[in-house]
Length: 87
Image (cartoon, rainbow, N blue to C red; front, top):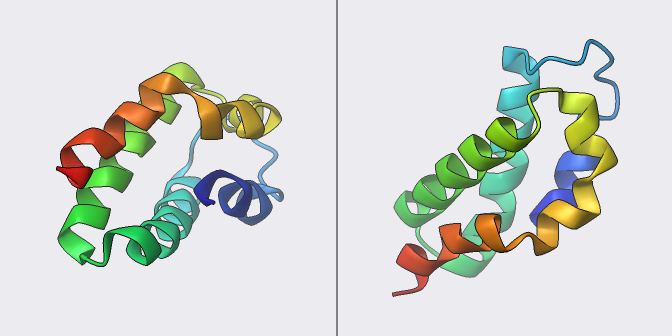
């Protein structure tokens, strides 16, 4: 699942804010995961952009996002990102 993979990728982040490197790592991990279930890079991109916005809005501090990584994988708001993709 996306969220644990992202957590492992971002473990070295210690500055708190989402720097470009954090965003890139999150997006890449998301795309790798999403491509396995969408089978379509365009749909994966749409999904990951949605997830990234929601995660960054909820947790402006990357470390806080990492502290809640398991909750994020079950978050209904983030799950909403799948709805347009699965139609």
